[in-house]
Image (tube, rainbow, N blue to C red):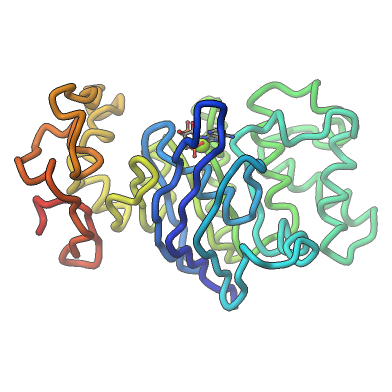
Length: 313
Ligand SMILES: Nc1ncnc2c1ncn2[C@@H]1O[C@H](COP(=O)(O)OP(=O)(O)OP(=O)(O)O)[C@@H](O)[C@H]1O
Ligand SMILES: [Mg+2]
């Protein structure tokens, strides 16, 4: 049985020359095994930082506090050699920046077969055949040729699909996919979507899918978490979030989509810059006076979702 991933009170900030930059603020959530959980939110809302923190892959300027458990195992204090065994085997990562995660001087084939043989007891020949099959699933028509090539010979879209294949190479119980369809055209995007679905149904991998592609989130995910300024401000089934968004920010994200009218979320109102209330208060079209005075808690919605907004108190 694959265990849940349970994050408690996660706070992350980065040390910079201008002082600490907050990225995640007191975030608690449980990603249930057996589900595909989507995470959406504006650029800079802390999605990647939250995802990378699970595998402790943040740069060493990150200050992290809180807890993250995979079942009974506390990942934040696990010895590094134990954590390395989990990476790829128990939790696979499809990172947001494919260029940085492919080795420039190692042939694609070797990178893939090494990923497969590190954790699985397979011969080199078997691993190579599996690598070719994985590439075929991700839309490479001549995988044998690709295996002989290097990362610099790949286009952006090819690199994106390659890192997806790498993240899934060991059939991990959990997959964290950070923007798996970024930069892909519609045809290939659908292909990646189908492979993720297939991996989910065939290998019962549980998934955290971080994305700006709200259509992908709606089609692929069971539930969606919405992040704003390092917090989850709404969580519900994918259908409820997309069809009945409760938080004004979530509604704003959907209306900013090409299919939703392309209306941008307002920029902050300077008159509301100083406040002690909801983080979205300076930009919220539905704000009331109390929204600037105190911070809303999580309000339960009928059906199991929750939203951090006084409108639903
Ligand atoms: N290495 C870093 N050093 C300093 N600040 C960082 C670093 N990485 C992330 N941040 C900051 O942390 C915040 C959250 O970043 P994060 O990358 O998680 O956003 P995101 O939601 O994934 O955005 P995007 O949708 O653009 O990928 C941002 O304010 C970002 O500038
Ligand atoms: Mg990101």
